[in-house]
Length: 415
Ligand SMILES: Cc1cc2nc3c(=O)[nH]c(=O)nc-3n(C[C@H](O)[C@H](O)[C@H](O)COP(=O)(O)OP(=O)(O)OC[C@H]3O[C@@H](n4cnc5c(N)ncnc54)[C@H](O)[C@@H]3O)c2cc1C
Image (cartoon, rainbow, N blue to C red; front, side, top):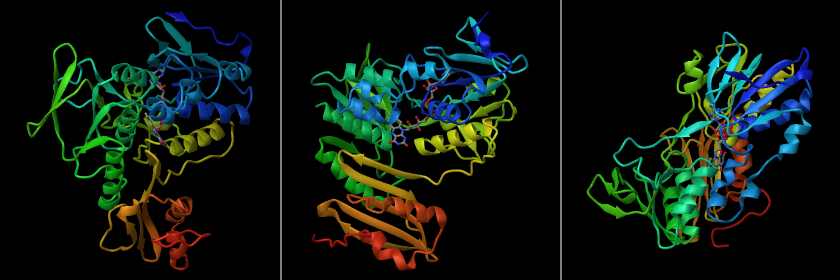
């Protein structure tokens, strides 16, 4: 094993190794170098061949709305200017905690005093026959987008499995490229964790209006083909011809490295309020981390965790308390927002505004005078305020009209 060079002028500085160069990793490095410039001898190692980029824009990249350059965050000069040694295309394959070494690939090791794991998640492949056929692709990184675009040639028929946020985005991206696209979802409504039936119905209509065929209660039994995918078979016997299958059925936190190193893991890498793992020299953040039993799959919590860890490693007091989640997206131009409770519990009052013809739906859920949930489609005014009120648990009795119709310009359904 060859030891990769660390900064010879580092002297007594602690060696901080960051594994993973995704969105959480970069935000952490940005905040750390602002707060404590030069305090550590920093190396970051990423498995992907490029430096951290904006993963959220991958759907726009797939749809051809932006190019790859628009997804970039920091150029290589930024890392250099901040004294950060960046290794790309370099997966860490093992961690030897006793000797403070990370194994990179098969032949190199990197010494560390402190280690940050920011290794994200791995897309789930359904445990069904044919999932490893060429043409069956997940949707997580730039390489996946390149593979989907390569397969999405003229007249190709695409099937997207999974009616969650990413599945919808993949389907819209493909349809925008002129590909005949069908979206399959095993549940009876799209995005069932974020939307109630009425809102999900509007989103389905919006997708169909953009040329995406939507099949609900569609249970994939197998993907079939000779040398590559040719068709997809549903459990009810329906057969869908397919030249390309995008699998978007969820992700699993990448815990293998931490587990093999003997760190405490559950669904994710278990961390405390300072993002510290069961080893006080090792930290985890982003989608790979499990905090108070919670795993997050969005950018906002990853950034809040990065903030906390950068404070902690700069010697400041810091404590991550968890993130109250909200979802905000545009389904092919149709704005959608959801936060808190989605389906109306018996104990809550639902305040509704619904105009399906106009593609408009707003629902507020109030329990004991407090907002516990909001689902908006078509008009997402006051989404930030709703999110804050759900978080704070402040009484909302005097604000309901403003929350429903917006603070500045009261509107009517007919307007
Ligand atoms: C298409 C798409 C659209 C999305 N849209 C939204 C959105 O609208 N809003 C939102 O909030 N979130 C969205 N997300 C989710 C968001 O991108 C993630 O929550 C965020 O990227 C998580 O950051 P992370 O750093 O934890 O993981 P990642 O960004 O996945 O970074 C982890 C990095 O670690 C690397 N790595 C893994 N193992 C190793 C190893 N052993 N050695 C070295 N490197 C390793 C990986 O290759 C990867 O580059 C979207 C995701 C996708 C895929």
